[in-house]
Length: 356
Image 1 (tube, rainbow, N blue to C red):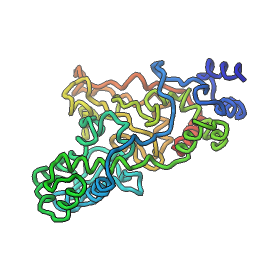
Image 2: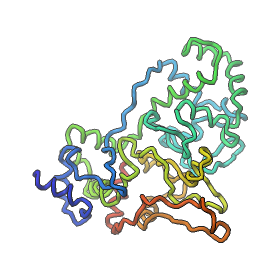
Image 3: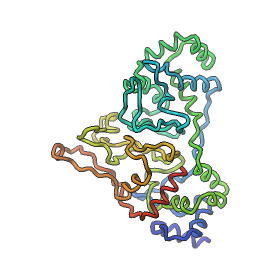
Image 4: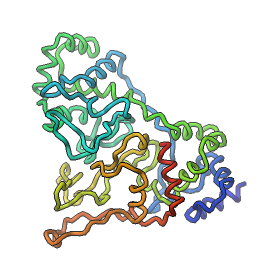
């Protein structure tokens, strides 16, 4: 048994669909720290896969209840038509299923709505990371002119003239006068209660902590093979690692359309650093089968075309005549490399993504 596991670790790059199902099952029936070594494009050892569990919250029931009411109340938008829940729909894993978010007056944004869960596991928020904390993030959509379009001063005026909200904030925070800090804290108190998407993967990886043999039996042959490819040949854990299935980092994936219509400069709009042009935060893959469309611009709606793009080495746009000499033209990250996955391997990877 030990020799088999050692061989699996040393040669995992070569292990593809040719490996017998029995061998994969034996490897993944072992404790997680004895699984074949994960492979990444830059050689770093990624955070091991693990269940996403909530971080303890000190919020009271009254604060959570208040936050949920605010989250669902269009009073936070200029024309009282849009709430936080308009873009973060509970039945859609707190995403909206649209290519780009829709705000007041039917305005369409230029970015896809991220799902909400595990907020304490993130080190930044939004595709460009312009908010460093959940409480900072909570207020930005309210003031955004194409989302809720309500200046914070007006928001607080509305809440402070509401008898119901003044009473609710008094009960939750012991203060009748509502401040922006209290508003943000209440919203975050509720958002912290949003669990990760319930999925076969979450149940599998949780069980794998205690009973790996039982856990691997939960997966079909194709799902197990997809898990192995995700960890090895497909190098997905280069960026999608740990409990969050994200490295909390920013990368140029090539979909910035720099110098063209629908250009999106990504993180550089926040940092004002030209080295960040075209960079976007790595999204979590948890619940990915329920949060289509994907990417910051909602470009993909099916797994296979997306995987095929990465399999070919990613999208690497080239400067046109207009910006041929532009020293700031963003280059796609070298972490995305041709993978040489076969059709059967792509199918297996799709099968695994479908259980995340």
